Image (cartoon, rainbow, N blue to C red; front, side):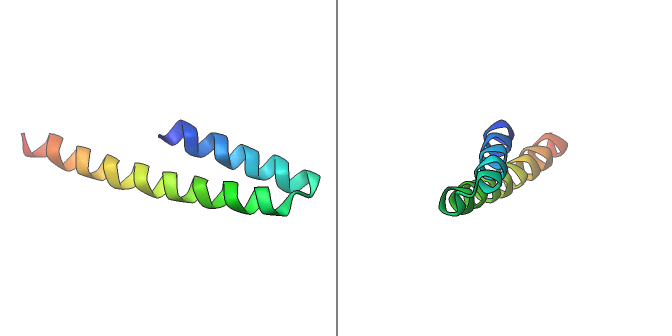
Length: 52
């Protein structure tokens, strides 16, 4: 999931560089959502591992 977030971030940066603001905005939003989801799942996994 972190890999996909980085891919969408890269797409957003490249699209922003070439002037595609709509694609850049959507890609950046998707990257943010995936990153937050990754962090939440990572914390849940870490807590479950420490509870064992």
